[in-house]
Each structure stands twice: as C-alpha cells, then as structure tokens.
Length: 289
Image (cartoon, rainbow, N blue to C red):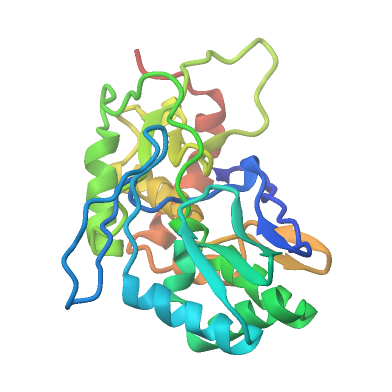
C-alpha cells in the first residue's frame, strides 16, 4: 500500500511436513481462471470433465510426466502425480498401498531443475533444506495463485477527474508489457474527514485476496496530477508482483527489490516531490463530488 506512514506486510507461514499451503489472508495475484490442457503431440486432445464450482485447469502433459518421473526415480516405486489450481494448499502427498500420491500446484510445472529437485527431496525424504527452498519458491510465485474471493461491491473505476481503468491499462502496458490481466481497480469509499484532524492517509492499497487495488478518492481532484495517480497505481501493482520478504524476524512489504522496481517509474522523483509538497492538502482534502 502507499501511505504517508509506514505500513505492515502480510506474514507467511513456513512449510509444514506433508503439505505446503497458505492461509486465506495471504493469497496473492492469480493465474487465469481457465487454462488449457495440452497432451502429448502424438495424442488426440480429449475433453475433460471438471467440478462445476471449480476452475477448469489444463496441464501440459509432457511437463507433468517429466515431474512424475523425477518422483518415480527418487521414490523407487509407483507414483501418481496430480496437478491442481488450488488457492491454499500448494503441495500435499501421502502413501497408499505402496503408491506415492502427490498433488502439486501448477506453478511447479514451470519450475527450474533446482526447484523441481528440491520438491522431490522434500516430498520423498522430508529434507528440511529442500522444504525451505520450496516455500521460498511459492512466496515468489504467489501471483500465479487464483484469487480466493471476487471483489466485494461494485467497482467504481471512472471518477470525476481521473479514470482509474484507463490509468491501470496505461501503466500495465508501459511497465509490464500488458502482462497483468487479472487485477481490478476501484476508487475507495468517499468518507468525509471527521472533526478530528487526519494525521495519516492511505493513498492506495492492494487486496491480494481479491486482486483489487483501491485508490483513495481524495486523489480524484482536479489539482491532483495524472502522473501522481499513475505512480500510486504502479506502486500497488508492484505489491501484486513482489512478495513480502522476511528480514531479522520481520516481514517487509517494501523490500529492496520493491524499492528498486519502484524507482523505475518514469516520474518517480517528481511524484515523491509532489506528495511531500502537498501532503498537508491531501490530509485536509475531501473527495470530489
């Protein structure tokens, strides 16, 4: 989030034996709700049935089989590997009648050899170091997990002076090659300041659960330049892509990587200077009618 005072990040639980998952409040950016299953080139594509309430996921069969063979070599026995698009449980496994049954999130089909090997070592041998590597990989790929909730309430994208959807599309195209296609945006609620003077203001926030950016309505004023609104939108999009990191026992929402990426915004220095100059006005401002 972008605010006038320090903000806190989302905590992340370490992997536990038997499964790696995530709590609902930690879920971040999502994969497409519908993907395509691609069988081996020599095989005819067959229609697959899925539970109606869940997303349809299709998996590259060659990648799935390659990962399954890794498990078979390490386990030295029969393995059944299923690929999921779960929101919370990224890896689970059990042994039934000598068969190792493994369920992994589809993010692992695109993992490097190092991560694939760590996944196999952790599942088959319970290797703790490999467990940490798998957990870190999940942290870095939370943008490939589906949103667990739809946005609550109607989205208000067009304001009196700024069109957030147009700004989001512009920032997405310019800085992310249009690759972000699953993030929503809306103006926050128009809450008038109370008699007590406001001392901080949250100009933007990002809900990983809903994949939703909220922009404070005080920015929908004629005296707020478009480049500054664009900077706030860019800042929140970075939260969609860059996970919080643990440092000295604390979770940092704005890591060094985040700071480096943030400074890539074309008008970064200009936006920071504008905010410092107008922070008092922002604290006193009312949302546009």
